[in-house]
Image 1: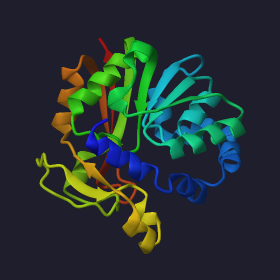
Image 2 (image 1 turned 45 degrees about the vertical axis):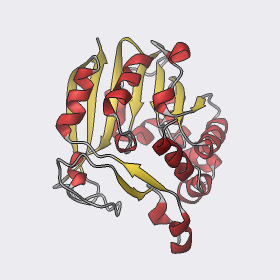
Image 3 (image 1 turned 30 degrees about the vertical axis):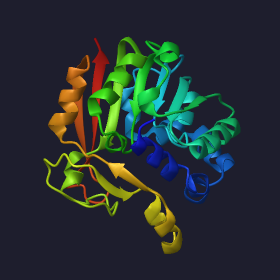
Length: 251
């Protein structure tokens, strides 16, 4: 595991379970919401899935299971790959309360066991700000390509690169030149929700933000056929780009 991955693991295992309990509620409550309307919990991502029943989904950096459990309720066979044991604890309790099964592999995404998971999944799905945790985008895309079956689908949704030059999503992260390739230290995603004493003690992450062209070119370079690239407005200002979703298939 690379040094920056170890640092990210420390950050994502620092009070993560308590954070999910405080912001999402106990797993039993979250499960009731998911069971009532799993499609609503998938939000915009539902339109990118052709079907759910029996589909094998690799949920990359799937965190607390917020999208994995709705997918499982709709009939998908979901495996979360994530670096945090604390995320696993909440996700498995969430799944148990929702009466569905998911698998959860705690690992660095770049070290997914491709002997076990190579050519295994119909869909590789990620959302919610993932790419900036990885300093080698080609290596990341190569792993996603490796775990997909032939003709498998990549659903890659992430924060829009516009956030490099504007803190439009109010994450309290530094801004920079759009074309910067520098790695920078910043707070992990949940830090701003904690009191100041706790916030100061939380381990930092090392981020690398990408441009649109870097993202698209990495998808193409690593054996995918790009089929669609959608841009979505920021939740803070619908006049500004906040997120994107790239849809690609494995050649």
